[in-house]
Length: 274
Image 1: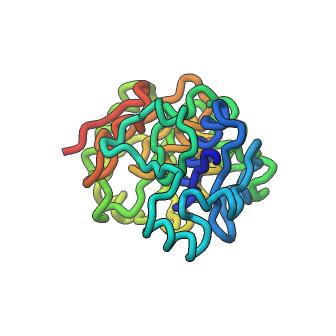
Image 2: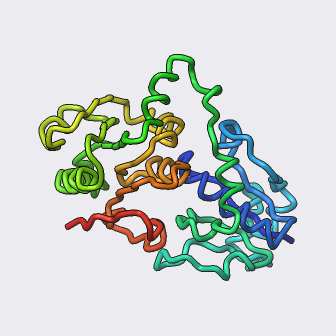
Image 3: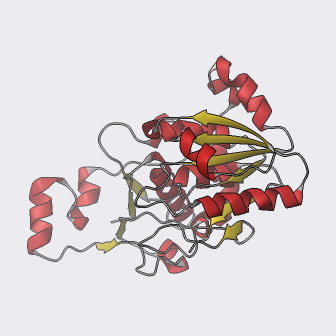
């Protein structure tokens, strides 16, 4: 038996799961990934050091085919199933478990802080891999006073980023340095024009379809500063950005119906959300 980490969900969620798995490898070199059928993030990144679980590896956890799953419901299996802690907090003991099937999101960079450099290399998107037409945008985003801002489906049920949040974030940037240049990527440009006050600062608005959000990560990570949406795409872009002097602004309350107390690094600026 061995430790196995399940890969599921969106690209950004899978990135957390892989990072958790990579950290787990430091204590358990035999750990495996349970990957979904079809595409997962291995097609997007050059991931180092992973092994995929086979059916025999999954049997002790009742995860190997329908018959094995039925058996797992009828009798106690020898392997342990571990899900996210109920309080959402980082739990260092998880990285030292044995014979465990990890089925969760693991939304805390603290799980992989010891291997952060490796994770950043694994998730880098080289500029040469981007379309040639994107070169000018990447160049602009790399300038010293550029601020990327994401506005994703404003007003939706799970969105905690209110107009007050964005306007406070903009005021924070303006109080830090003069003449910033905002690049706003939004699913609803008219909402931005109606609700957001850039106080005379230069702002360029770019509309994107909600279903294409993941593609933004390759560009966001070249930004110098970031005003996040409560989206894991924003989170990864902010975390991957290499600018040592970067300003990252995030909503203090990440989700309306759940708490993720260890998701946001302490050196990021968190704006309270009512």
